Length: 219
Ligand code: 5RP
Image (cartoon, rainbow, N blue to C red; front, side):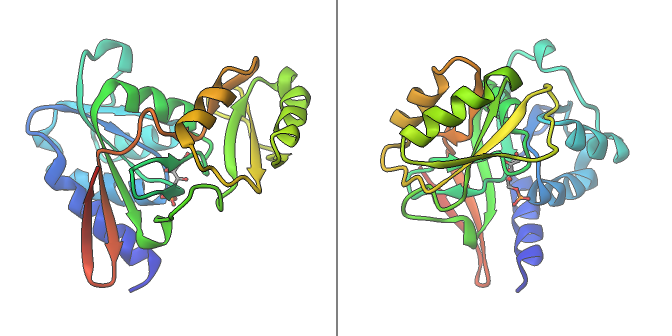
């Protein structure tokens, strides 16, 4: 099976986690696009979606799915999103699509995070995928220096401005042995909007696409 077929498989499988009549959180990326397309077949069964990016909002609306303002919603039973990497405890690296800040906001509101990913995303230790960090532009140079001191090789993602007007730094060469500690550390630097480590908001469940079918990992 191709990677695209695996993404379609888990996008479809995630429908089983969509609560009848509820509001769901929707992530961003190519795997989530498969989920949104599948969701369109049962859109009458949900009250609407809180979206994590302008791109997902556009796709949801194109299918006629109501997009709700997160500020107007008290609870989101499930948040469905992809990941760039996920470890065996449900910690993730996210932000390959530059939507990490809004993704973390919606994930933080949600009761459960259902991660959908093809099997190439499962790792023992996070860090092979360059770690994205959204920063306020005027702080970029200082944050690049601090990341070098931490042992990483950071670079500014060229030409990218996030939905929030931020810039993205990608950090190579970090072996993230303690995701929660690194998330806490980087998040407190002035000018960091969000680091793409999702440990505090880790996955509750991962639907992993494999050639043998969907493997469900519960954390
Ligand atoms: C976007 C993300 C995505 O979830 C992540 O990049 C995975 O994307 P894809 O499903 O296209 O592989 O964090 O900011």
